[in-house]
Image 1 (cartoon, one colour):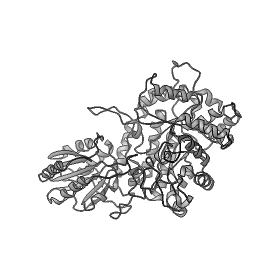
Image 2 (cartoon, one colour; image 1 turned 90 degrees about the vertical axis):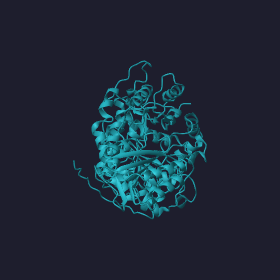
Image 3 (cartoon, one colour; image 1 turned 45 degrees about the horizontal axis):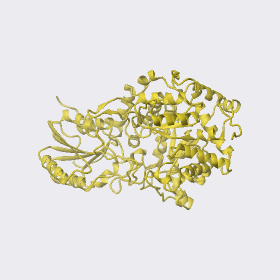
Image 4 (cartoon, helix red, strand yellow; image 1 turned 45 degrees about the vertical axis):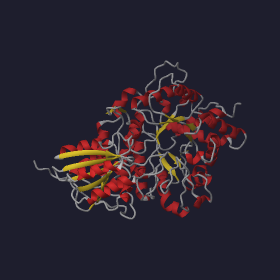
Length: 604
């Protein structure tokens, strides 16, 4: 069955060279240009005047963006062949996960070469910038880094620094490196106001718990990303910060009414809309105080259409969060989830639980009259206009030769180091333990999961030259008490014990915390009375609640090398500490608290 014509960009259809043979060499695109946040007249005329017919099924396929792995795939790989088939059938884009820059470019260029209309490439460059997706490759067992994108500290670190310039550069550099490897659209910034210390999934992904600060720094990120040539996404609407449940597992419930939403959760989103954010991503959360029932917000036209588009005036693209998350799959089948999300107001079905079943279900919903063709065309038009604003009509493939000049550059890494240093937050230091005196004997104890292979490596290596003697140990969730007992014995023979805890939020886990044995060990170390003790959190700032009597507590926000290096320099007095808590740690500390420490002059 052929449907009514849908207005299309002929320029978009022709730019990828879909008719070329599989062996044709990709044509490199020019350097990415900064997208125009509005719909320029030329782009509108292109959509309105240059059109072709498209079947209903092809139109629906434009609204589906599946998740794909970012690693290397051979041409004969069955999964890659399956993906190529969907691309040839009109898939609108892909959301790419972890890989190295060269693998990204090779895979995305190959996909673009087979697309009749250029693919819109998205990715979660949200928490640590490029390093979240293109800097995670290490050789095993040597752990030799294979290189990649710039790793920034987690997003909450920018709340601790409180510097709009740093937030702007975070967005700009993330965008530059994303575009260099073929990614057009950042699923960032996270604008959830993390007001609940027990939130297991947002935590350091947020800028903090003050709505005004989240709004201000989020807008700076948006401006920076635009300057770097990428489009941005405010997420997760209407807010995922005040939850105790991970939506990857089950449906969280927010206890807010409309007055609370207006006062807290919606503040950053209103600012983002005013700042020209290109997209909004939905939250799989229930808001019964507003809706009167436990429907996910993603499935609510009252929130997605009436509130976001009507009251707030948002006219960009609305992405669902991944529809294969437990908060959705527990209540909806794959096809029905996509249909209901589109009915509620979303434009793009992200990471559905099956591409084919999703396209078939939405197509059937239009054919039955449940969803109008006009409704589908409106969303497709938004996608095509976005692709035009990105300049994809001038070439959707990227030049592999330019990756090394734009990704992980010295300038970018220096900015990441600056951000990590500015974010360090000394929450308390009752006995002036920090900085540790030069020439001290130090015991460094790293707490981390077994799979956190890099935890403590850079921190200890940076700290070691400073100490007169240094011993290290590593413990984890399953460490038995006899190991802790031996560490207590070792602690009696040193001047300082540094406990470095790597406890970040993790999707699909459902909690952020440490076991009773580790808590007991830290308490016992403090009770020894001899060594001076400092706890450094390379993850959740709320970890202090497990050690309420700790005398010295510093937050480095994340465990990547850039944060480990900054924290070690602060412990030794080689770097200043100036950060402030962007969240409260009830009942111990309030937003804005933090101690300053200056650089200690070393005497030769």
